[in-house]
Length: 354
Image (cartoon, rainbow, N blue to C red):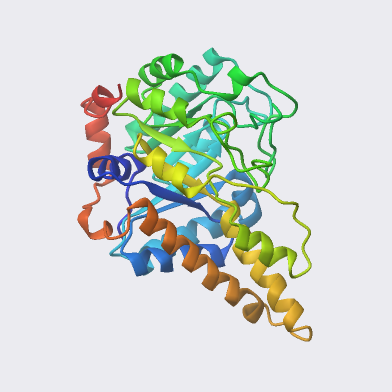
């Protein structure tokens, strides 16, 4: 079993100029598909689970599923990451489960819907960093609030996201503030707000610089060239998956995700972790709709889900190849958590933060 921390994985990605797709896991089939895609492409794996995924599956089931994935593919470095932790206790419970990385999203208060003040974010994130680094565990922080630059509205997905409207400056990470935040907290990766959002309904038109501010990422990278940046809400929402769903009984309005070329642009500007969830859900659910419409007498869950799992394998393999992590799995020698803890204690990583 080759567990790896986010810090070590993203350091390797930075050194070799690639990005890591971070796939959200919501059930057994998504886990199987992500691992199969990584095996096919010889890619390291970044698995992540949100608080709602933990509630849905149950921590014990999720813990054993993550461990089984790593044990089944011992030749692949696997990072287990908590997505959008809302407070110290949530992050600590993930650490106790064996997660090698956690996200403390202090951009929102503990209720996961109220935008926080900067000082609150620094204090809460720092408290998680202090505990995690003594265990050798990595921490991702977030500065700026995810939401639509088109409407100023927040997005709420799986119980996470602010409600109401915010000013444009609140929806964009300030580059100077990012420098202060990284120095004050010592995070290993920084999620930035640039106009992306969770879910399928990100943009009402193909995004341009007014509603997807990639220039903000470029400015932050210029000021923080050694900090690993993260794009949340980076699913592409492919047209073929929208059509698959709608042609088989669905009713999804025309929508647009983050174009792949913009993700590639981000990778060239320090984005090392790219979160993907919606595309997986669409591939799986669209395939189920297609199967059920064409096989009306079937009630075999295995048969219903199998085509979707195949589609998710294909989607994830393509992301691995496009983002450049394909072929990198056997080039990484995972460090243990105790080795990582020693490096944190020695200040090796913090000295590179800025």
